[in-house]
Each structure stands twice: as structure tokens, then as C-alpha cells.
Image (cartoon, rainbow, N blue to C red; front, top):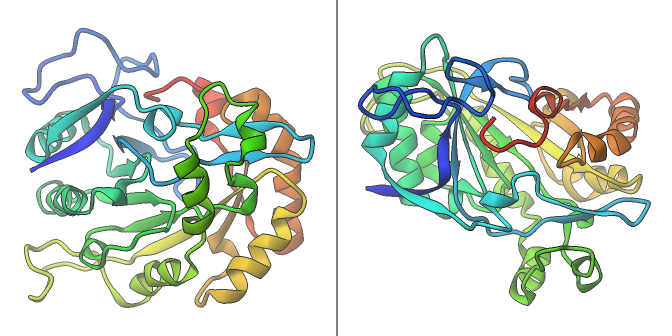
Length: 301
């Protein structure tokens, strides 16, 4: 089975699927595989990434100054110019040769859940063969019940109204969002019933290491989730509470992360204090973006 990844979608790595050194080194500039998880509850931990291609949303944020910014990984969502079909077993081999002391793998996008069967195969094989901790980064629009057995941390990033693409925002974008995505984004972006399913899975399921979830798993571990909101405007705070948190159960303050909008360090600085004040007022977490401080907006880091 294959899955669509962005070009160089397993990163940062030194070795290929045969264990041979690649001609070019990791984009981090370090002479070793792996990077630092820059966001969320696992911030600061060494990780490897698998980045899938394609997304069902086209986030185009606007802040209180009227400035527009798009997804911080547009090459996997807005502007997928190059993608690669990867055999699942080849991905496992590449990761195995590059793990070293790393214990965490992040499956991100784009939006991984738009490829449900390949995603399930990837996560289950990673768990069975390499026993790694798996984070799934998702916008929370789709839920795949079988997948929940194999994921340890659901990093759910619900999209606020400020993320909706509009004809007015389109005028500020170098690459315009299609009319279809403008229409569908507003309809799809908020799905609290689906988000609750992710949360409920953390209440009821352990992490699965076997072949068939219908049999007794050989090992269970604790699952966790985080709700990661990208904030750009003062009014985002009320929306987080009224449109999302009031409709969700089993959410603690420390599960809610507010992350300043910023696809590069310059834009990030404009929203850092906005996010920090929201976190302090509500007892939420302030979500750093360590990768931008370390590597800027360079892809593959």
C-alpha cells in the first residue's frame, strides 16, 4: 500500500531505506537525523516527521491589522507542487535507519486523514514494528475509529473563523484559493462532534501494539490530546470558548493551547503577546513555535 507524501516528506534524515547515507544532509544543518518538536505538549523532544500531501482546508488568516497569512506549510496544503507515492514498508525502513535514540514520530500534513486507509496502515505498522510514540496532527474534520488504537497523542488544531478564505483575502495572496475551497472551508472547518470522538478515544482506549484491535492488546499506554488554536485576533478568544470549549467534554485548561499566527519569525512576533495574554487569562497553555526560532521557515526541519 502507498501513501502520498510531500517531496522529502520523511525528515530530517541522513539515511535512505537501505541504510545508505543520502547525498544531501538534513535541512536542519545538523550532521544527524531528527529535529525538535516545536509545538504543543511534547515541545522540546527529539522527533522525526512524516508529512503527507494535500489538505481539505485552505486556511487564510487575517489579524486585527488586516494582514493575511496562510498555512505555515503551504507546500503540503495550498501549494502542493511536488508529491511522492511511498510504499508504507519503505517509510518504515527509512524511519528505522534514522531513529537513533528518538522515540517520537509525528504524522503531519497537510491533513493526514484525507488518506484514511494508507494512514491507518502507516500508523499500525509503525506501532507494531518500531514501538514508537505517534502523534497525529489533524484539523479535526475527519475521525477514523480504527486509527485511534495506534495514536498516542492527537494534536487537534480546530480552525477559527479568522482562518476562512474569502475573496477579499484572496486579493492579498500570491497563490489564490479556489472558489470551491472558499465555499467548503466555512462548511467543514468546525466539527465539534468529531473533535469529541478524538477526546473520547483518549478516555477509553490505550495504545495498541497488536494486529487486531478486536483481540486483547499485548500492551497499553496512556493516550492524550491537545486542542491547538492558531490565534490572530482578540475576538478569537471568545470564539474558542463559545464555539468550541462550551460544546466539548473532558477538556482541561492544560489541554488547550493558543499558538500565535506566524509562518515566519517576523509574523510570529506580531501575535506572540496576544496569545500569551489569552493563555494567562484563561489558564491555557501558550504554544511556542520553537522550530521557527531554531530554523526559520525552512521546509524539512
